[in-house]
Amino acid sequence: MYRYINIYIRFDIIYCHLYPFENVFSYLYQNISAVERKCLDCGDVIHGRTDKKFCSDQCRNNYNNRLNRDTNNFVRNVHGLLRKNRRILADLYDEGKVKVHKDALFALGYNFTFFTHVIESSRGQKFHFCFEYGYREIGNDFLELQQNSRYLEYQ
Image (cartoon, rainbow, N blue to C red):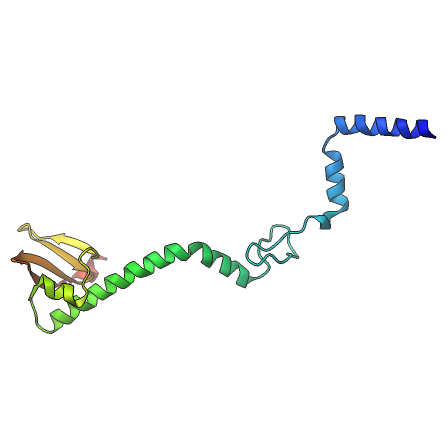
């Protein structure tokens, strides 16, 4: 009896050296539930398709929103600054002010580093626009405001 067990052990060792992955595959095949898939967001066990990554649509949305949070916040902040700059220029232009001191814009909260585009006229004058409202420097820290009525035609 001992001799048969010894032969079986030797056979098993030789077989494992010849076919090393067969035991792993047979184990996984017999115990497929041993490999549990977990949701990438909440960690719950996933049931259903084998390529499923999330247990629900809510978990999928939470996961993707968390991944894109930094990028979305940056874009949201820049867009907020552009809207604020446009509102300040629009309010001053609608009041009939065409010539404004730079400090007045700065006091209202205008940020000179954020604008949508620059247009250079044929005379070499540079206008910095925030959407359809813009300004150009005319000297002594004064700015000339302008509205570009053709802004939508450029789009």
